[in-house]
Length: 150
Image 1 (cartoon, rainbow, N blue to C red):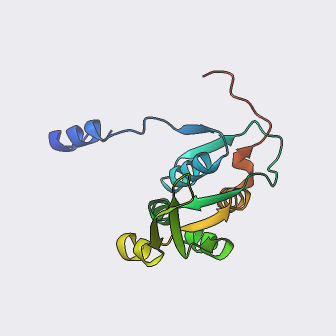
Image 2: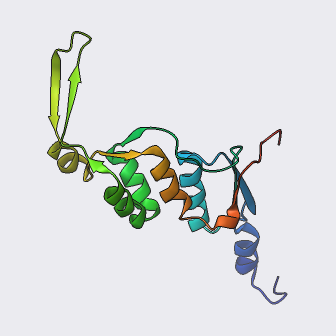
């Protein structure tokens, strides 16, 4: 601290918030873990992601990404959303049916864009994981690591 600082400057320096943590470990390299890691890195944190799987394999099925999910990812990095849109399919309409296969409601795709500013997208889960993982430096993702305590 500057010995010549005024009392007001000393108070401001003393009351300046300090980061609570310097390093963050994210357990799990699924979609949520990777998205959180990307967001935290953009905030300047040193983030390491630990995943128990030995490698990223092409598993999983289709994944529906609603507009709020796309808006969340867009807030982290708009390039992620563009890549997802280029890798997935925009849903033209959604149909809700009961167990007797009777249509209860049909929702046109325009409602998602008009109401929420983003479409409803389906994308292969593994492809989405690849997109998110590609936004992190490879040395921050540690495969074949299991959390046993903290």
